[in-house]
View 1 (spheres, rainbow, N blue to C red):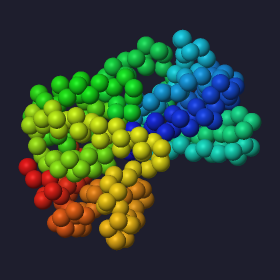
View 2: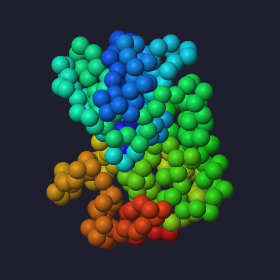
View 3: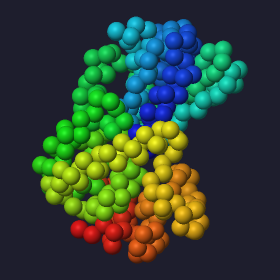
View 4: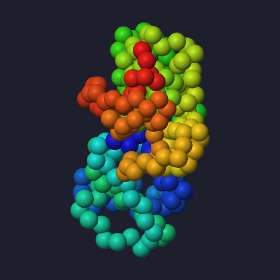
Length: 272
């Protein structure tokens, strides 16, 4: 599932391609056809992202019609230049104009919602490190009361929105925190450092459209090691490196199942 930086990048890309321009809105698949017909020929005035939720706002900025998109596990977005090719019947939503088009396939959610419904979605999500209105103290207030592991809490979108499996594993490694420590054992200083690091890493993810988490002194060039080869993108410390040596200590990276997701950590660098 895409992590929050991907969704914020998509919000920027949709805005760059279609903002303030009259847009043709269609649903070749048919599952969004009625809503598409209502929006067809109207301008996209703004885009928004919160965690893993993308919002496309049409018509009046003060009382917008919003398309709510959640890609889920299988959703894909593809941009292209005009003229747009004939769409396949797998395209849930196509936006197009005389310059470009974008197709959405296989999302978990693609729905037309009201401003009140959009506010309700924001209300049930935790603060997002990539949003200007995020309050890390709100997230920490929930973390410090919990007996749940910090690894599970970081993936709970009601506590902190946008963090997925990669950022979870990597930020805990970068701060030498055992993933099985409980939330109530995380100190205020540790939380502040985790939050600040997530803000920096995820902003970099938006800029580069990929996740890189290793510090400059641990890059392949600096360490004289082969670069990572993985379809998930950039250089990492522990994510999907099970049974391989840690870049820092040489111990074997471990993996385990936690809340139906694979957890990765170094038992030496992340002592409990």
